[in-house]
Amino acid sequence: MKTKTAILILAFFYSLTISGQGKITITKLNSTNLPKNLKYKGSIKEAIRWTDKFGDNIVITSETGEYQSKSRKEDTFRDAELFAYHFIIKKDTIVQIWKVYDFINECPVEIEANFINNTLQVTDLNDDNIGEIWLMYKKVCHGDVSPSDMKVIMYQGQQKYEMVGQKKIVMADKKTYGGDYKFDKAFIDGPTIYKDFAKKLWDKNIMQTWGD
Image (tube, rainbow, N blue to C red; front, side, top):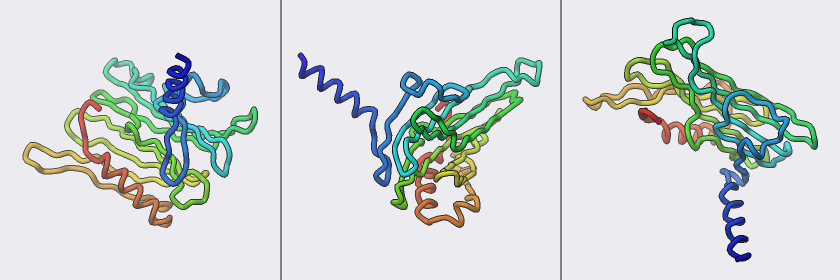
């Protein structure tokens, strides 16, 4: 009985710990095992923890979901927000390194502002023992089949890299819309290995699906 219990505990532990690209090992967290004095807005989408040259790191992504717009009295107008935070834990002190914030407001039709599933990750592509943090999300306010806006954001330390464009839609007549993207100056001037990794993320998540 003790052996079976030990196996179950080990299986649970390994289910929470996964290896990122480039020898960074991350541990998945939830609201119950985050530091109590960690401050964030919204409901947690994902939370991860790892150690690198900077120390003990935590990244949280969170969303509000849609809610009634405070700036409009009509019930049909809604807002939605999303957030991402990077903290470094130093003994009993929490230091916020950066914050990402985006939103849709006063939307009278379909609204979304959501992180894309299974895209939060930490890499060390240049092997400098500093994690590269990757986030990916989509947002839109539309009443038709137009594609959602999509972003890939990467941070290394406080340096931000951004890739912006739209998801791709395939119509009934096989014509496609969207799918284009642009790199910001940091990506353009940065290492090719970063752009290549960003393109792989984009291609993997490019297609618009409904209700995901």
